[in-house]
Length: 116
Image 1: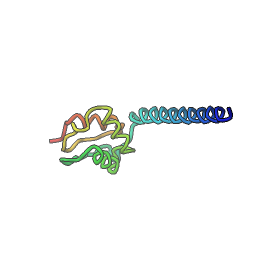
Image 2 (image 1 turned 135 degrees about the vertical axis):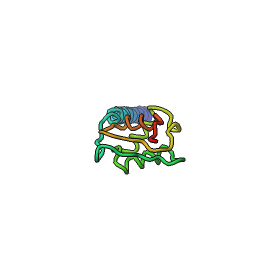
Image 3 (image 1 turned 120 degrees about the vertical axis):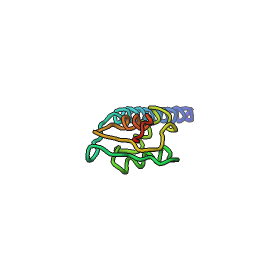
Image 4 (image 1 turned 45 degrees about the vertical axis):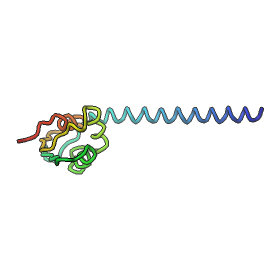
């Protein structure tokens, strides 16, 4: 019987850890969803953002962060995946202005409306 008590205790600990992990995942998801719509001011008010042919979503998001268009590259990547197909982003120059959220930057890039 002592083995049964030990097994029950271990099982209870595993459930507690699983619940903590689930709670942490839910909190992270809620944070990322609210952060998607948080405005991020662009220095100078507007920026032309160039996407080179063959750039993948990860490289685009890293470049957007480096150029000060978004706070976190990972957040933009999440927004792009949530808003549409990352493969739909076309090479070209995009005008990003104001204080767009990561979701708004994703929508601009997914729109395919490049400057001529």
